[in-house]
Image (cartoon, rainbow, N blue to C red):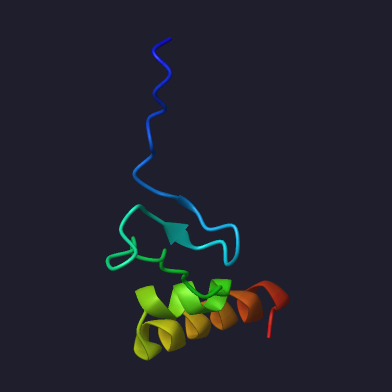
Length: 69
């Protein structure tokens, strides 16, 4: 052991918890936090309103056929 300690490139700030680094003038970029999305939000990203209406109509028709109405 030569007594030298290697300084990491980044670490968590003890005051705010954001990433910190050796250069105060150019700190590391803060992580990007994505807001929580519901299941419906993910479905709406993949399907258009028309697709949703068609799927709903299909499901309602199948339900009505099972019920005999």
